[in-house]
Length: 336
Image 1 (cartoon, helix red, strand yellow):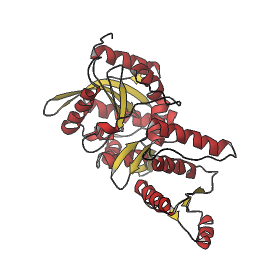
Image 2 (tube, one colour):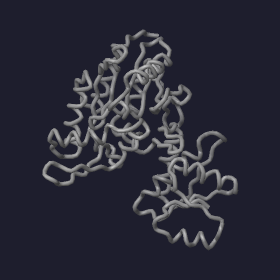
Image 3 (cartoon, one colour):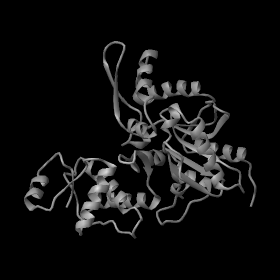
Image 4 (tube, helix red, strand yellow):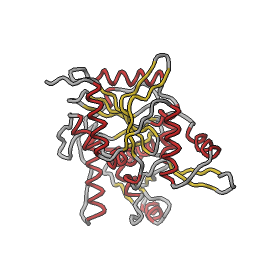
């Protein structure tokens, strides 16, 4: 194996990201991050903010846990402008993924109990949404993972609580994991694959497939789940993502049927929920009916769906109630 220093790995990654369409920016401190955020917010929302107006935006941003900020990131917001007008805006375009602003920087330095320097940070509309931690070839991947947990306990505060995904790599092996308020669990760090379930371990190949701007914005916007009961952020495994993609295509482009099938413990309920959620948001789809074939699955599915999104579904075993629910335009998703 050719040994490659961490600095060389970092430079090659940044060069590749720039080649994929990211703009490289120099951000060395949290004050630099705030200055850049204002500029990117203005570009993304096609507006010019006064210093006081930007403070109002920051008042919205600087609230809550990783879980609460994940919800803020995906919501629509407004502030009152200096002239009394109302400005409506968002922090992330969750439907037209490519219409966000993508930047990359490295070695952001934060002084905590010790000096923390983050390897590569991906910014979307000025917010740090993806953090990549690298170790030189030959080092164990878990060393990078442990370093992230150390940063979480020491310095991932403020805008860094908006990080949605962490990526760890030693060049030949790469994984991704969703952020959490507490210590990250290495068991939930996943390998990325292609549609045929072949692993993409090499950092360069992973970057081309997973970190290209439109794809990473799509994963963050569509294939992450905010688990309301556990108050945590979840990211789907690659086979779940590819399954949902195929099923959405089947539902929207054909008149054929489709189904979710897999072994026990594979995450079928999460896959089904995400599919139903996506389809229910399509303007030309009137109703999504989730049909299960056993009573215990009926109750289990309802319980799990409501953990992901409370009140998102209704269920019935009554024909008359079913007919009533089918006519209810406010209830887009039905389990029966």
